[in-house]
Length: 169
Image (cartoon, rainbow, N blue to C red; front, side, top):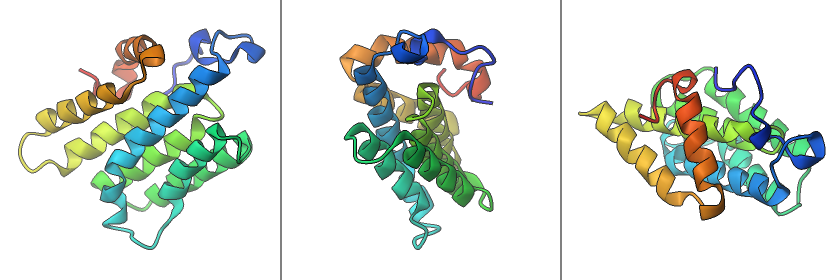
């Protein structure tokens, strides 16, 4: 489970009754895409002919630019998750990270799913200290956070760490 049972209004857009601005929603999508792209090579090294995870990441960015609809970005995210289903280990987690990134256009709170799955991918590929690899990935992700959404995401990590496999320490 990645999403909480009760939706946090900070991740619901203003037009839907929450407090999230469109610009911050876009920043969340871009950050999630970066998190997923950072581990995408773990999928592509196993499935080099399958474009679905990369297309989900590109779909998230295209949604931010207004080039695709929310439904198209979400569908691309679903296809990336489909690419993960028959896999195990780092490749599976990387594809799920891409799928979550694509879904941010639909539900902003999927941003944490992209980050959590990317950390799981980094842990799964580690040859020695999985925890240290996860911490390094988490720190890299935090270093990518735009200032305007930094506190929101860090608080979200704190609140949802338990349902995200405690990857955010």
